[in-house]
Amino acid sequence: MSASPAEDLLQQWESEQARLRQQVLEDDTEDWQRSPDFSGLERVGGVDLSFIKGDDVNACAQLVVLSYPDLQVLYEDSQMVTLTAPYIAGFLAFRETPFLLEALQRLKKNQPTLLPQVVFVDGNGLFHYREFGLACHLGVLSGLPCVGVAKNLLQVQGVNKSEEHQSQIAALQRGGDSFPLIGASGKVLGKALRSSDKSSKPVYVSVGHKISLDTAVRLTHACCRYRVPEPIRQSEHTAPSEWLDDFVGTFNDRLSTSTIKGQQIHSSVWKSDVTTFRLDERADG
DNA sequence: GCGACAG
DNA sequence: ATCTTGTCGC
Image (cartoon, rainbow, N blue to C red; front, top):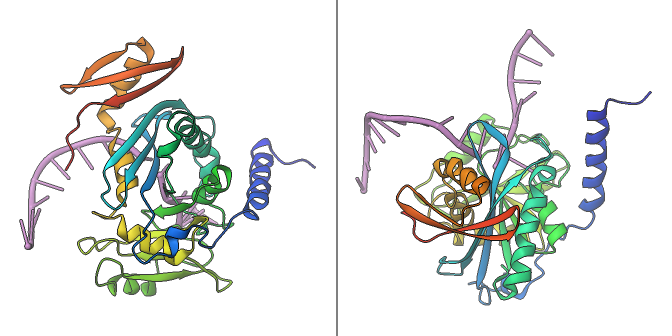
């Protein structure tokens, strides 16, 4: 008996995850990762996809590169994309990875000296049903060190929002405090991190690729001005929701520039149907 | 049927 | 992911 097409696809995806899982490196592979102050680290990246309300097919893929330790924007790339895969918990990478990889490849081709030395991914890494979340997927396929930072807890391998979990959160006193997320096997799959003094709700950090968990947590804390690490926050901030309607209009009309909410957008055409945008100025806190 | 469900 | 207003506190 053959399974339904949907079941077949999920099985195929699971085996792909299992295959790529073997390539994940869970240790520090870079010199700067061993340094107490991350000496040698100059560029940190962040990636994200933004959607608009009624549309889960068209999105804006974002890549930003910030300086370290100043966390100033060195590079940003925004690209309207059309997704093919649906969102299914546990298979986020099959929906998002192709477009995040494209953004990294554009950067590598056009400004290779600005390639980030580590990429923050919003979503989980090893803290995943099969220990292979988006951050691992992007890490293995790009070869870059990646850190997974989820804003919400994925209940996996026995980790859940129990009383115990809640009290562990309550015990996090300052930014930088954390506790381990331990899977059923006893393995530490990630850590809940109080990312700043001001935010009581933690973020969930896990290894993506080519970095140890402790380094990932330490680095995440070092990149947080607010709850969400600055590279991810900046990449999410690059395409505020209201723009996207106009973004799409601009895209469809193939205009070279447009003005949105009083600000001018410059766009450059790469191909007949591929456009990138750059915002001259934006209001940012 | 009920709960869970990164983004 | 995205929606939306106010509210509380430093």
